[in-house]
Length: 155
Image (cartoon, rainbow, N blue to C red; front, side, top):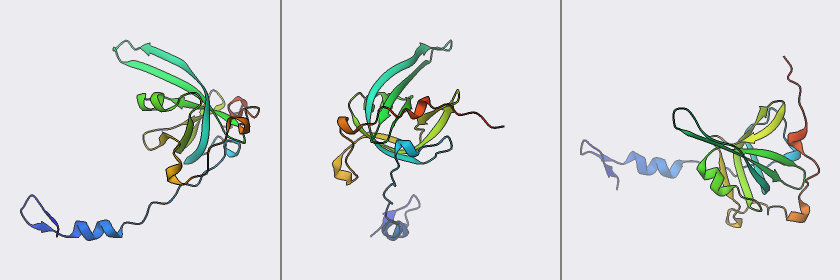
C-alpha cells in the first residue's frame, strides 16, 4: 500500500513515516500573574471579560485595519489581549472561556499585551481536550491588572 507519485512509481515511505511521527505534546499552561515582558510560547486557559475596538479605519490604500483589545482573566490576574484578525474577532467575545496557545507578550508603550501571531491559536474552551476547566466568573481576579503595570525599557 502506498501512493503513486507523479512519476508513476509507488511511494511507500510516506505511510510508514506517518506512523513514526511523535505524538503531539500537551501544552503546559501558565497563569496570567506569571507573565513577564519577555514571556514567549504562552498557553493560557482564561475568560474574556470585555472587548473594545481601539482602531477601525481604512488606510489610504483602501485596506482596512481593525484592532480589538480584550480583557482576559484567570484566577491570578487579568491582561489585555490584542486581536487583529477576523478569526480572533469572532472567537474573543465577552463571557467566552478561551484557550490561548503559543502567544507571546509584546510591549506597547511600556505595558504588557498578549499577542497571538500566525503561529498561535485562540479558540473557545472545549472540555474534550482534557485541559483544566476555565475559571468561573466568581474566581476571576480582576484586581491584579497585569497590563497596567508599567515597565521601564532598559537600554
